[in-house]
Each structure stands twice: as structure tokens, then as C-alpha cells.
View 1 (cartoon, rainbow, N blue to C red):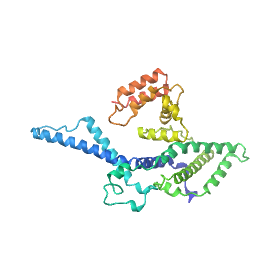
View 2 (cartoon, rainbow, N blue to C red):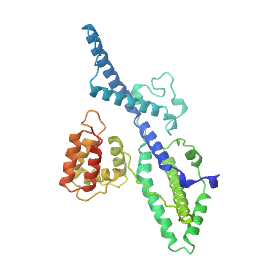
View 3 (tube, rainbow, N blue to C red):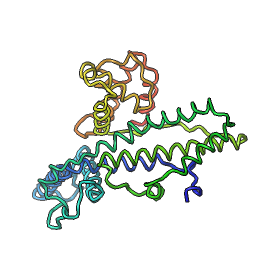
View 4 (cartoon, rainbow, N blue to C red):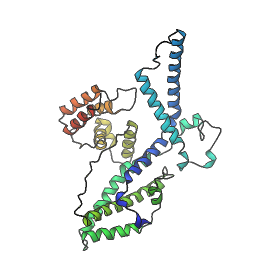
Length: 333
């Protein structure tokens, strides 16, 4: 079966993003009762305003029950509740889960409210592997493939084909599920997660080799170089990734606590911006937070926030960031 698969055209990154997002959301389901309470409080506020207006006989004009800000907050709560309820249904995919944990009498099927609020599965390792370790390990693997060619007597295309054949003859546990876009179970188990990620690295090596062979066999075809864009991450995801990478020694926590320079470095990395050494002050981090936060209670994506960050970027001659901010400013009304 594996010989019939065109790995070159697989969008593995799209699949991995869905896996990482799903497990991240499962790890946040303890917040579901919190958002439901906030949503109910807002609904009660809306109802009370409606009732008071009716009591005053105000029925001849449209009733503005919520302010624009409250409407946006309501949408935010609804989206969070929808996301977390969807994640709640995926709890059986966790290594933690056993059928005896199902309780049809509980409000949340597997939990009562108190149990859900205290439920915090360790899904951080999924996010760390997919967004931190795996890309680094893949880069090392690709370098090894290219470095080994230096001493190989084979022509490059034959060298690639030989490597490809060996990789395809190895065992694959998760390939069928990956091709079907299925969610992999028990990735909260570190051993299972690492096995899955090593297999994905192997698949990406195959993908790399097939692309190289295609280029060598079809030199007349111009290969399009697409711009890579970094997906915007929420503050929770940024914090989670940073914390996880810190724990395995990629970032120095003591250095971070002093001047926030490592947060700035990580932010630049995730934003697709080259990180210059001069970004070492806390102001950069503070200004960046002011425009990136997804918390409705903060000043989110306002022109004033972006203008402040732009001013700071210019003061330290950070051209790449200036261009990005000016581009973002155009989308702000």
C-alpha cells in the first residue's frame, strides 16, 4: 500500500495542527463551567435590562439589551463553550480514560462540575513535541541525509531513491490513521506521543526525499517557493509552549525572569520575524502583549496599541517588526 502513496503531496502540517489543537483544547476543558457561568451572568444581565424596559413601557423602539462590547464578549464566551464542549467529547481518546469513568448521571457525562474544574490532563507534551521538538529533530534528520551524501559513491538521485526505499520498508503504526485524518489516541501518554512523533518525522523524511527526486527528474518544472506563514497563537498557547520548552532546557528561566528577552525571542520566532539581539527590554514584551492578547477584558487590537508598538519598534530600529505592525494596522478599522 505504501508504494501507492504520493507522500510529496501530503499536507502533514495541516493534520499535525489539528492534532495539537485538539489535545490543547482537551487540556483546557476544566474552564468550561467557568465560561458557562460567565455566559449565564451575561444572559441574566440582558434579561434584566429587557424586563426593566418593558416595565417602563418602552416597547415602541428596538431594545438595546447589550452594549457592543458585551455583544463581543458574549460571542467570545459562546465560541469558548462550543470549543470546550467539542473537546469534552474527545476525552475517551486520553490514556487517562477507561469506560468505567462514564457517568450518564453527571452533568458533563464523565464529570460533575467540581470534578471537571479539577480535571487537568497532562496534554502539554503533545504541544511541545509537535510545535517544539519535532521541527528541530526533523531539521537535524534532513541535515544528516544531505551530509551522508558527501561520502556516498552514488549519484544524488540514486542516493535519494536508495534512502527512500529503506524508509518505506520500515514499519508504520500510525500511517493509516494519519492518511484518514483520524485523531491518534492516548497522546497524553509520553511514550505513545514520542512514538507517534518519530513516525511523523519518518514520514516527513520520505516526503522530503520524494520532493527532491521529483525536482531532479523534472528539472524543467519550476518549483514554486511558497512563503511560510506562522499561525497566530493565543496567549495561553504562547505561555504553554514557552513553559514546555523552558522545562527541557531550551530557554533559561532565570534569564527570562530578569529581562523578558527570551519571551521576546520566542515571540519573534512564532511571528516569523528575525530576532535581533537588541530586543532585550521589557517594553517590547509589554507592547507586544497589548496587541496580541485575546482576552476581551484587555485592550485588544486597537490602533493605539499598535501605534505604541510601532513607535517602540522604530526607536530600536527593528525594520522587520515595523513592516509587520504597519501591515496589521491596515486591518484595524
